[in-house]
Image (cartoon, rainbow, N blue to C red; front, side, top):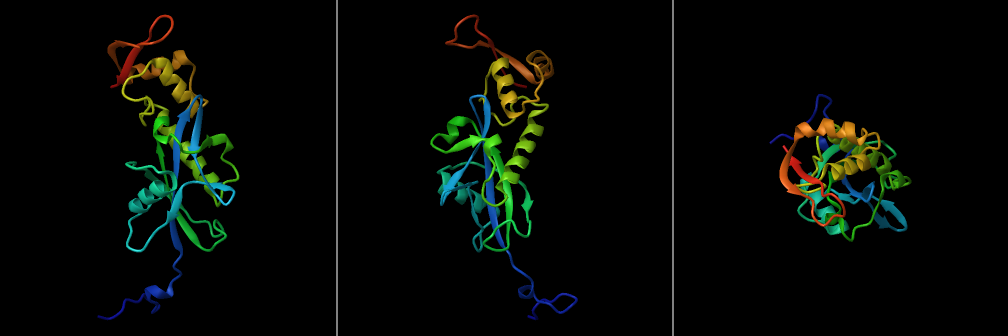
Length: 206
């Protein structure tokens, strides 16, 4: 079989072959703050990631990196985009396919997280990846009640508002927020247990 060439007679091996990596922004809400998971490498911080291996799919590389870097399994992040700045990695020409996922805080037990506002000075261009992941999450939370299921199946409107506010500080005041979200909520007929004062009603997503 004749080897493939382009219109200029170049073969595939004649083109530059940069390394490909995957990096993942793991987001969660802890307390009143949106946080991101980081790993420490030689005294600096970065997102969990790895290089793509020969014969490996991107999704497989992401799964491997999360398992090896932070001990996380059974997670399916989604792609953000490819970051390909020429000088993004001082080790050489490296493209990274960035991913993101938002998880309940109990899924990240034992994993180092920092508030997203403090995610500055990370290795490579990981600050930019975090910023893009946060922006994407905020868009998802603008019109839908907790689409990442950070609160579980049932929740009070107050807890829902607090979660949305942690993700996006520009979230509307609780009364306006309640009116906007009620059309996407269904009352469960149950009330919150173990609280002081009048128990709040529990809702679920419509």
